[in-house]
Length: 375
Image (cartoon, rainbow, N blue to C red):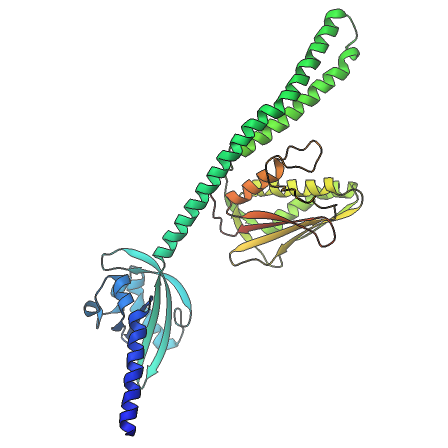
């Protein structure tokens, strides 16, 4: 009876093991100490396009493209002699090769087990090609959505240009005509008689030029010149540029870079523009002595997060500072922060804002370290 019970238990375990192998979505492949395939489950057949009958007893390197194929046996011998593992006990991203010769990205996890004198290595393999295709499709749809948003924004810009240029142009026309009439009435009069009007003319033209410049910046999108950017160096440059202005305004500009060296692929000039806009806005918002803090904070793997907080009055309820033409500044165009967001989104990042713990505004910038631009 005891033998029958033990046999039944073994049969149950075998059936359970077979069910796991059959239903697993990941490929499960075992090899012996010579690198010969001893187990090849149904998912492995689907992923590598080989029936198990064609691979069992063959060297596992047949499932690998160069240079993995040539290096595998040497690596296996080296591990058995030295115990120095490169793949065992960790998850690695490598390439596999299907029967058709197509190579594909995969995640590989290898474990080792000893059965008596025999060593078996078992790999769990996940085909990453479909995930990458899905990610590429998500990126394409996200880009399409951004492009549609930009088209709508550009339409709003065109309408806004017509509206916002009407009054300044009328003022330019009136001032110019006033100057001409004075000259016609008294051509020998001193130039001082029209100085005030001429200054108004120049000031209006300068405001129009700034407005049109921001319109053009937003409408043409962001073309990025990627390079390696040291985050600490970037923030140090921002601090050096704005510290004299902060001191003149009685504001403490406290900038702290990352604890460890952090480098990202980005357009340094465009990122400077983002921080220049944020620091200038903070200085404009603070009335009297105050404080601006810039910090690098923990973020998800492969990303960097930079936090800028000021001690100003904060943002009014219901104001979306990233919406076109929303502004809390007299004479502001409402394009500065939308352009900042456009720059960061073009890098594959983003920006958000919150109310501070007591007062002020807190801007949070998230960027990928390796540059994933939305072209």
